[in-house]
Length: 250
Image (cartoon, rainbow, N blue to C red):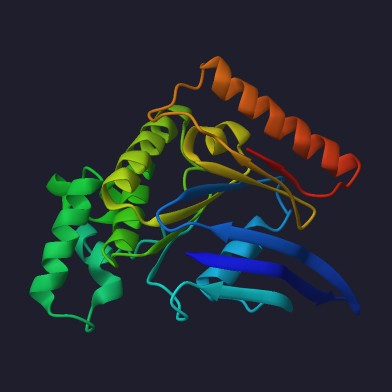
């Protein structure tokens, strides 16, 4: 799907240069699910914004298969729904005026069915729970029929029970639709529950890339999954104290 080489992003703060990302190399196969995990402030969202075309890197290159940018769906940390619009109109808003209304209606209907909200198409955001509102945000991304689905800690504000349900539903949606998913989280357990691959970021550097070859759905109490969780956590703790070169773990 894309290839990043020596990707970097620096900002000028109070007259000095601050690096948010440094020398990031990353390849994502088409249809893959990659979780990007690391501490708050380590550059995860910056990397996601560069992939989305919302920010330009200050160094390095980013190239997509086929040359042009793919269709991109972006799910933010908060639902960001418009309170004066219905669920259906929120979900289809990004397509308004771009394709015929009957096509929009069909896509919205299919997306709401995928996220379990078929019966709430005419509801307004104030009538939804937090988990339901985030489902609408996911549906809004899915109606674009994205090749690349970018998700920035979308379940971070949810309670543990709703989060687990949403994680399971996301995996099912990905397995049905097969977009390339890049999922940002600071929760190591969430990363290993969801990702086929785990990209470990520390202080703006990619310090590890780990494959998680476990079947779905995954059990958070599975000893094999716990071993991956422990290894990722140890790696991130180690590199926060002593920056190391990138380690590739199959």
